[in-house]
Image 1 (spheres, rainbow, N blue to C red):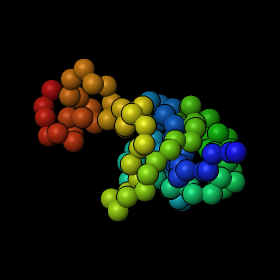
Image 2: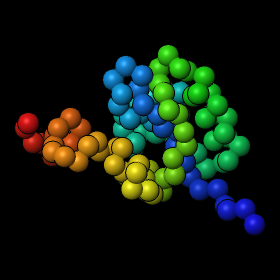
Image 3: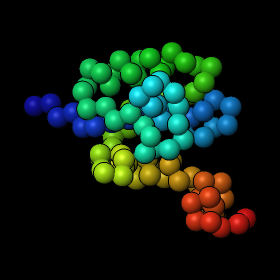
Image 4: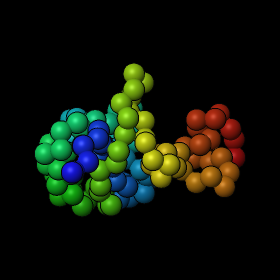
Length: 104
């Protein structure tokens, strides 16, 4: 029996900066998971994925990532996606410093 489809977002890495990005409903890219288009239909998710893969001048490594919808926006359901969203864990820098208010 096939597994039921779970909500997903289209994610990739920005070509020039390498930052993790998510596809918005308006087809733009955002660095904030809260602004990502949450896909709840498998066929629609596959179409969005194919469309995003046709933008190699903008992003690389496009794929669908599982999320759990919340009132605050989608949240990753896998540790890998949470790690990608927050960046390296060796010390606070970049996105981590911005979220923590830390200075490097």
